[in-house]
Figure (tube, rainbow, N blue to C red):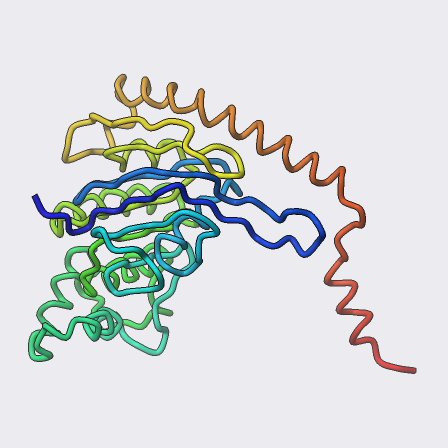
Length: 291
């Protein structure tokens, strides 16, 4: 069995400087878990719990305060092509066409002869269902299509692991479900390891091989749930008895953490020494013409 695409998070902690005399903001605390090659892991937790911070550390975009992340037994110390990141915001290049965007990912694969770029790019375009839009620009695509393009470009770079930060969060239900199915198909076709962040319970259950539920900030591992739903998965599963049973179990955990998050924000608001300035009023005062 190959180790390619295996991820190990060891006793990870991240503290941000709060700008005051206190100890700072603890975003992640003593978090450990493993991800096997080809596994689809979903990180589920309340908003603001530290999921994005954790993913950025795995991508090498943030440095941990303590602990470490290893990919294929090598410590992550910065960005690398072996870790592909898909953000919630659309990140394609607007001055390039669809096929040019996907071929951009191939620039990071020196082993691929440039003569084959068109063929490979069309493979990934087809994989995400963008056939016929090869010569379209980003501005001509819907939000869902733009996110499909971002996934195709990231897959074309052939990363060992795909890190996805709520990539479908801004989409309507129909587009969201369509992309969930396409992502599962692409993962199976390319045999990719995926770590996917969301706070949507149904999405988490539908996508995951294994679900890691995180606590309210700071992010710690509350529990993990193995998802034994059959594959390939269909949308009909979401209304089936087994899915609903898992959903009830997951909600018992997530509601506890959501309540803690609410209490955390209430305490923070109450303990604020000075109110946050109104940036709009500040800007108006700053740019007010002198009399």
